[in-house]
Image (cartoon, rainbow, N blue to C red):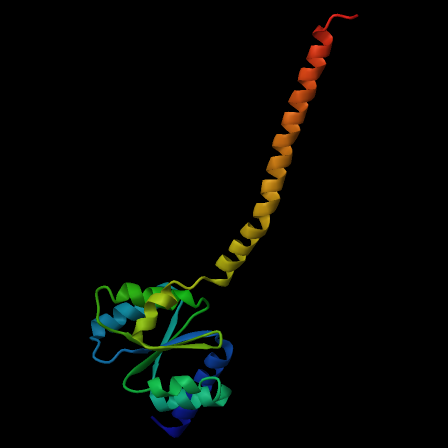
Length: 179
């Protein structure tokens, strides 16, 4: 790889890291070509961009963006590294967990999720259970609506009770003999 090609790759990675809130760094070493092609196809189907790159180039791109924010990732940049870029933090974790049911690799080296760093393959379970922003907003809306729905339900049932009571009193008065 020439210096110009390395520089272009670093710039492309820097741009991706700048515009991505979520990315996973994986170890794909010793994967067969067939397994790698299968994994890349599944990434594409899920809307995940997967890039393999040299560790030194990944580190230079991360340093160009913010060396302090990504400092915890640098120790994981050993061996063969691939980067999964996604719009949703949960999707790569779910894909890795699903793919690993039938394959030993890729292993999760680290993940960067909205300024938090997760290290090691044991983080896959937790990352695959993350809730998306839309899920969390939906839960908040449901929680906010719940007390109002209960209040409206009680008012409506109370209104029916009062109506029935008034109707019963009215019927009694109509049936009562006049004195």
